[in-house]
Image (cartoon, rainbow, N blue to C red; front, side, top):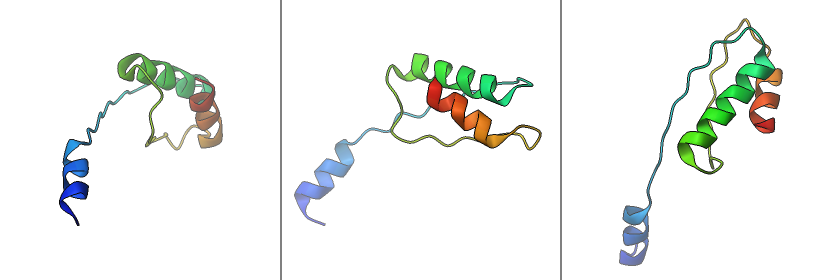
Length: 68
């Protein structure tokens, strides 16, 4: 790693936020989570990790996240 690469990595900032949504509809839960994240971050995230209850359809939750 060169000095230039090292200073670039050190200057990078990570912004992490968490939200927890309780909703019986997976799509609505994803949509609410996306709206809360956007409100907290001020812009769409570059990386998103989502944990979805096994009682919900993960594809519908992801659809809600994408829509939001």
